[in-house]
Image 1 (cartoon, one colour):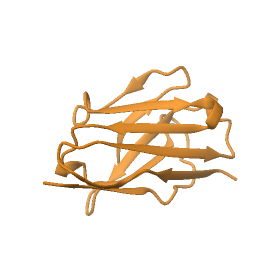
Image 2 (tube, helix red, strand yellow):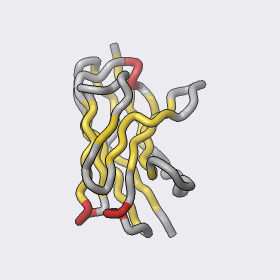
Image 3 (cartoon, one colour):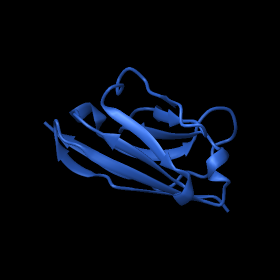
Image 4 (spheres, helix red, strand yellow):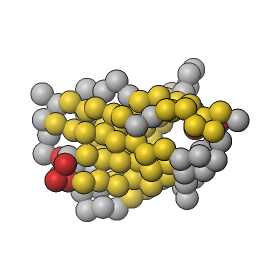
Length: 116
C-alpha cells in the first residue's frame, strides 16, 4: 500500500531555514507529480509547492522565492527547502500527489513552528 512519511520539521526562529523530506513507497514515484501541503490550525490544507515528473515546479505567491521543492526519484523522496521562514509559515506540512487524481493516504505530517 501507499505510504508517505514526512520528516524534518521543528522549531525555528523567523528568518531561519528548514529542509523537509518525504519518503514515498508503494507508488511508481518517478511518474507522479508530487506536492507539499500545509495546514495551520483552523485553516484549510493548502498546496505550497509542486514538482512534476520532469522537474517543473510551481509555487503560490506566498512562498515563491523562499521555498524550493526538489525530488530524488532514485530514493522516491521529495524535499522542501524552506528559507526566510515567517511565523505565518507555522503549520503541519504534508506531502502527497498534486494535480488531477485521488490523494494517497495522508501521512502523519511534520510540524513546522516559526517563532517571531
